[in-house]
Length: 119
Image (cartoon, rainbow, N blue to C red; front, side, top):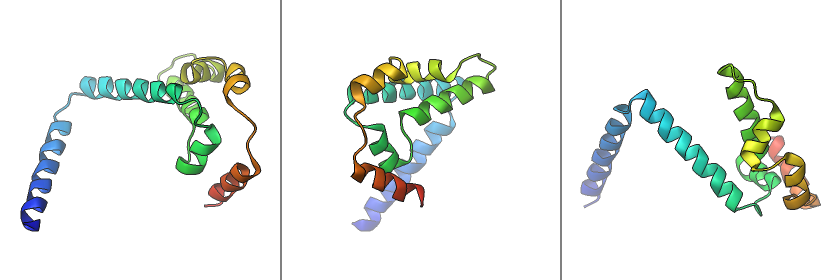
């Protein structure tokens, strides 16, 4: 039975890989963009998830997305500054975000963040 399950998983993996490899660049770009918009919407719907907690757990946060967004704009020759990128990611200015949704980090969060940075 285990062999059959493993064979099924292997076959499913090959089918999924095959479908992905057959996407056109345009289809892949559209899927990537739609997924990114969904991720931003998810973060927006979960404003209680703090940036420092994201950094501790995953090594990235909304600010990272903002920096990456700006960097990709530069790569494409699009004139976009960090404040524009932050407003896209946060759905508001960064100052508005901090005032409304970002409490001061706790000593525990800061210690966990520092420990993560040392990895």
